[in-house]
Structures are given as structure tokens and as C-alpha cells.
Image 1 (cartoon, one colour):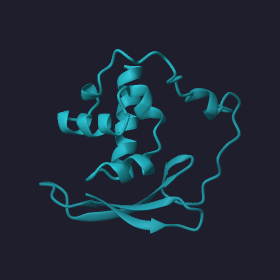
Image 2: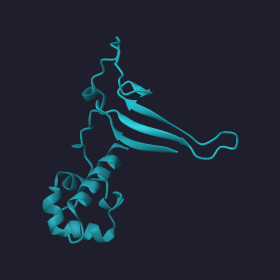
Image 3: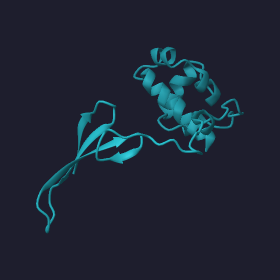
Image 4: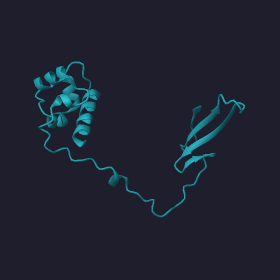
Length: 133
């Protein structure tokens, strides 16, 4: 069993491993830390300077351009959107996936009963996933 103990002085995550039930071992506990350098038995870990580890995160995770023609994808194909929701979206001038992606979540959620801005954001995220698949 693993338990979270809290954060140490350098923001590494302190954890406790507990042997709860082992036929040939007595109950035992130990602390370990999840640090920027990996798993360690102390939170005082220096990250070594190594060549080749200077990755640029912004280049690894570029979002795909969503301005592609998505007119062929019906709104009903988006996860979380059913027939009733499609009708509510159509009443609010959202007929295509492109219009859904460009809609302001707060404004759209105010117009659709029962849909929060988080729900609209989820629809938009699911639409992007559908487009990129």
C-alpha cells in the first residue's frame, strides 16, 4: 500500500510504502520521495547536468491546427453530445464542429439549460480529439 505524506521542503512528494499482508514478511513501512530526479530515499537530490537532456517541451507538444474542414463530421459523433443536445446547439446557431470549437463556452453554457461551461469545454476537447483521430 502507498500513502501520500505531503510535500517536503523542496516540493518533492513524500510517500510511505507499507507492507500490509505478506505471508512470509512482517508488517513494515518505509518513506520514499518522488523528486525531479526520480524516486529517492531522501528529498535532498541534486539533478545532474547531462548532455542531451535539454528538451524543449513546447516543440514536443504542438496542437494540431483545428481550422481543417470539419463540415463532414456531424455533432452527434462528438462524445457527450446526444440528439437533444444537437437540437439545443442548432437553436443557438451551432450547426458544425467548427462553430462549436469557436464558440465561447461561458456564453454557450448560458444559452443551453443544464450545460455548464466545463461541459462545453469537454465537448470542445472531445471534438478536437475526434478531428485529430
